[in-house]
Length: 331
Image (cartoon, rainbow, N blue to C red; front, side, top):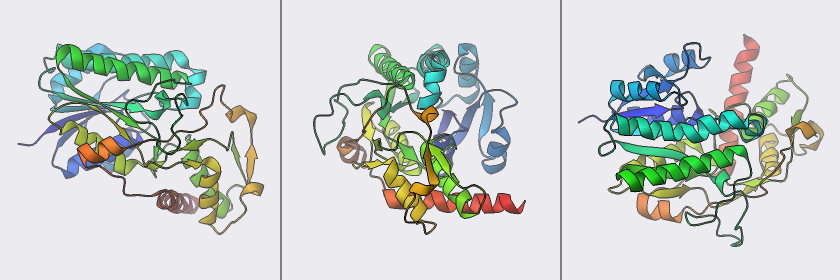
């Protein structure tokens, strides 16, 4: 029988890739969208007409209960969040309400609708929950048993969502799993995120549309993978007989400078430094110097493994933005 999935955060990068994956597996896909005037609504309707959109808000429990009653899902993927780390420092209360308490609201909506025994739930946790503490195993990276020490309101809110999911799993025997995903990027990443900001700026510099890019700290290292690979891991978690938590990562780390070098290399520029200016306004009050994940459990239990390596990811993003900006320039 055809399965039905409800995805929150349908307008985001992961929502796009996950909906595409599930549609390819013949799922009936519902997507939660906040507000009738959502600027991303037209894009979803045009590019993914197979998604059945339901209006709802993670801060409004009644709207989530209604969405559950309409979709009657077999699987719920909670991808919605105030997900930009820098922005979370500027608006920590909203971040807590959406990214933290919003998870509780979705879980409660499932329970109130009578789905705690039948609905499988995925919570999008994050490597930002680790925050740099317990990094005393060089080369091995963070696994599911590493200590948490979030260093941003976003990380703190995500940690609440992570633990409340585990609590509902233990309290109500829900099939609720958390994916602790390390940084995953791609052509659908929002322009406010540093990787897409770089790939887009590189494209615009190549086309003569701008002459430099302003960034904050260039030293942090991240475990960067491709979002299209990671949504498959989400799906695999909900196909397991028992719920559990899994780290999805590449097992290697690269700095923002590494990303800059490869991105500018795609347009034939070997020395990127003249094109990059550091601006203090992009510095965070607390920074995580390095995040490296250990995906061995996901590889062993789920059979999951990333396909797109780091150079290919950068190449993919720059190529996309070159085509996008060239098309915009013509219009």
